[in-house]
Image (cartoon, rainbow, N blue to C red; front, top):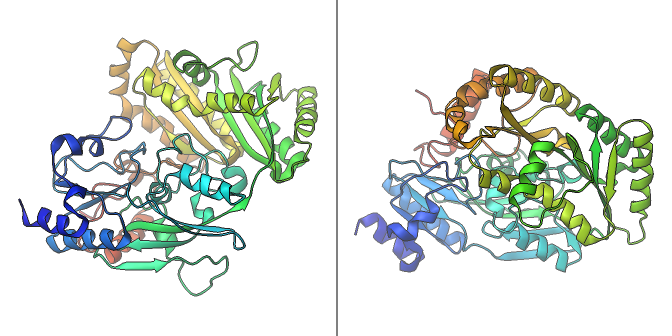
Length: 472
């Protein structure tokens, strides 16, 4: 047994340092099955002190560290490289809710809490933690923070950057920075927590966070709406926000191909409308008041939308179960795609006003090169985030198309950049886009990022091969 493994077992316990190949296997492959790595060991600390001790051992031995949450990422950001040099530190045992302050509307949780656990703890106190993702039962708060997760309610509540007040972070040398402040005003220098949010574990390991809470939602109105085209969807969003204000909590665009995959592969899924349509939106209004007449308000706005030619048909949920069924159609798109087979995935954002332009121009350019390409487009149109995924409908044709990923990305990403967008809206860069980002960020911006990396991680041990390309 190596001195490193012995020291790690002394810090976190023998049972929590995995070296057996079979026990390690689930930690070495990403959720999509695209990336496979090797590691010296999987370490599972239960406290911040154990986490800090494990990091210090690795730092002293100059061994790379790969932080891992629920392993639900889509860009290989939590998968070790294939060189086998790294130790994976899995945070699944750090799952305490440390404090819930109802009067301050905050909750302090450890990084290993699942998103669903935080939602549940908030609900038990009569509060709402609004981040909502399809993977909320398995993704961990640490991963949500490290990728600056967005989800379906960014439109109203913002992404993780807007939902965090304070962090506790284990730095690359094993020191602990305690920034767990539940303050909405703290103008005492650099906002250090923002360095670690979205950094994908390349600057340190988030061990705990103070998160914002909101009034619990007691009234909802949910509808599936067919629209003529994406331009009509954008205008419908504007109409809803003008008429309903902040009650518009979600506005999701779903293309026909995306819905068809769910109907094909997800048991119990049913078409929301009598006839198929090329484009639909899933709309939700919400309010803390029990007596909010949201259903009537939504019906009135959708009626006006039909009169203006912005909506073709609609189904308004008459119960919570019906609303859940509509949401299941949206939330199961990624799972249906995984069942269907590998595709070339894009997580892009552009200004909301440019979404119709992006969809029309990207589709036209791709079909000019590959006439039978299948475009699966869906996403959070309310904040400009589209998941734009491409494949061939015939399974035998798909491997050859996937091999052209670089050419496909050039079309999609160049157009995204031209329209003032980002090639990664909420999934991060990970391994998937680490090199690709160099085409779209200026040399000044990359140098600023490398300067921060050098300052906090001078030995370059934190999550190597992810997010940022080191200097030559």
